Every structure is written in C-alpha cells, then in structure tokens.
Length: 102
Image (cartoon, rainbow, N blue to C red; front, side):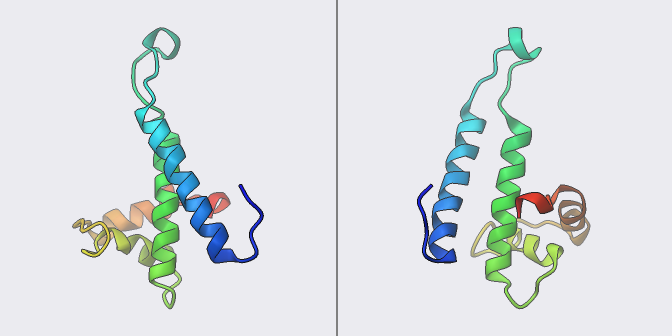
C-alpha cells in the first residue's frame, strides 16, 4: 500500500486490494487432507466482500447513514440488481457487518 494524500485515493487502492484478496480466497482450493473437506476460503472472502458492499453503499447513499441503507445497494439495478427483502438486508446489517473492518 502506498502513502496517500487524500481519502479517495486511499479508498481506490484499498478497494482494489480487497477485491484482489477476495478473488484469491475464492479461487484458492483447500486440500481435504489438511482441512477435512475441499473448498475455498469462503468465510473470509464473504467478510471482505460484504465490507466492500457496505463501503460502496455508504458512498452511494451518503445522506442516509444507516447500515441497512448501505446494504440496499444490493437491490439497486445500477449496481447488483438483486431482489432482497428488508428482512434479508436486516440480517446482513445486523449479523454480518463488522465494525472493525469499516
């Protein structure tokens, strides 16, 4: 990571770093003999991807600074275009949002 003179520059680099790490964790194949079952690093990849979504939602919805509003970006057709219910978004914001990583 470079030294940055402003927050937007830092965010551009850190978001790209987080996406790169998440991609690596998803594409990585764990060996069953060491892990008990094959797979990827799903939990850390999910955490970092949700952190990215929360950050994007915060940027897009600047005037509305609540966690559930941030996750509504998942339903926005300009970004993810999902059809998640308010209950599902509540679960994300209540249980999966990690304040340490935001």
